[in-house]
Image (cartoon, rainbow, N blue to C red; front, side, top):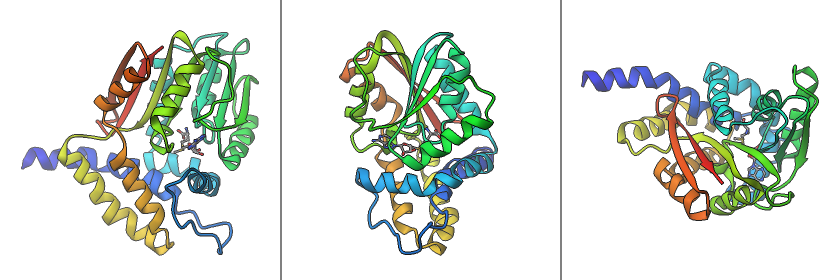
Length: 270
Ligand SMILES: C[S@@+](CC[C@H](N)C(=O)[O-])C[C@H]1O[C@@H](n2cnc3c(N)ncnc32)[C@H](O)[C@@H]1O
């Protein structure tokens, strides 16, 4: 019992932060009071969701994770091995956190592409470029992670942060990443860790139900709530992610649990 209490105490805040981060980003008041998603299970509805939350996404990430998401993103980037002069891709870049980190790694002789299908997220990313102390080596591209607009073997390294759980076809996304990655190069995929531990998964869901949902319902966003919860439930465990990577053709795949087991990073080599 004591160890359970200690576990909940040490992980509780972090769980709240991680889950609430993404959930509460979905709680921003709608730009138009007439717009409500009826479902966010298909690609168009997911695109609309991420367009809508774009203006508040960064602030809430920082606030609700107490800045920890920055550490996890640094880890993800370092695992790619991206270095000076490389041409690298951040898939599902959102407002660009990982792309900005990659930009420093590859420096002025390198090139970073940040790709996302949300125009609003890319607008935020692009405007952040001006205030960031980064090299002018980033290009923002609106595109689909399931149909990457790049030639085979084009990139020296690839990142994907909180994107794989959100695409409608995870296998296709992995196949596309493999296709555009140079042989011998690495992709690093950061996301929630779908835990096999009953305590962790139950507590995460408890937090959604009892902390996040009451706030969500005030805004009438029950569909968004359902999507978040189901996206975590339907995501793959670390072992399943490793299996998927190997099945689509990566030569090695290793999933690391980080952030006290709440987050995970799949590192796979072409
Ligand atoms: C949770 S956000 C993560 C943003 C950013 N990578 C980060 O870590 O903060 C997920 C992003 O995936 C994008 N996305 C989802 N499905 C996509 C697809 N099929 N093609 C391109 N972008 C997609 C969304 O627009 C959104 O910006």
